[in-house]
Image (cartoon, rainbow over all chains, first blue to last red; front, side, top):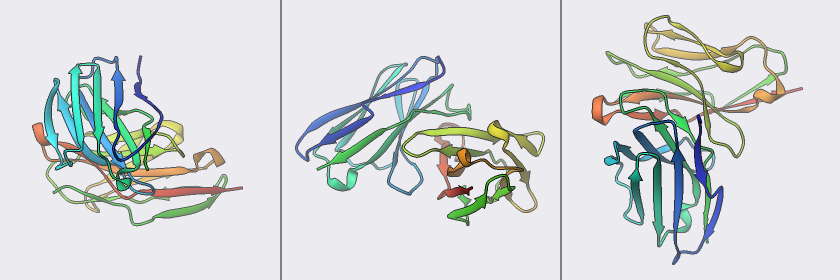
Length: 113
Length: 115
């Protein structure tokens, strides 16, 4: 298995909803990442997990809450989002933090209404 | 801080013509460079990477790039493009070091292949 799987592929949520994005990989990678990509913009790093511990938080608002329950799974919990949070959320993984080969998932397209 | 610059936001080209997508990086002692492709409504796929060694890097789908230290460039080339190469192309660099390293992307270049 050489893939990063993200679910759901599309999500529409209201500003008062709570939802979660899921990312899974079975490549034995120990570093996992969340990126946010607005339309016609490059991906921007949000969070980095290394060996299931949060390594980098790029000053992301607290309405985004990451979680890494095990080495294969990365979640992004969403609460009280704003319409401007609508974007493509990409997950990626790499063998570890010093291995510069990231594998990206196909993303979750989030729309906040 | 490490960064990459993609000066061309869009590059139109006819099918079977050669293409070059430009990328310049900020100078540093050690630099690790990447090209990713993003097809519409999809994630990112790694085309090629330069970590060390040979300055000419060959990637997937017939693409190659040359690391040029004196010009701080890492331009992507393909000798003959196909309609299916139409996509957004991102140059990226590893910034920071050790536990703080991050993959940072340029602003992207839309390659528009016309018949």
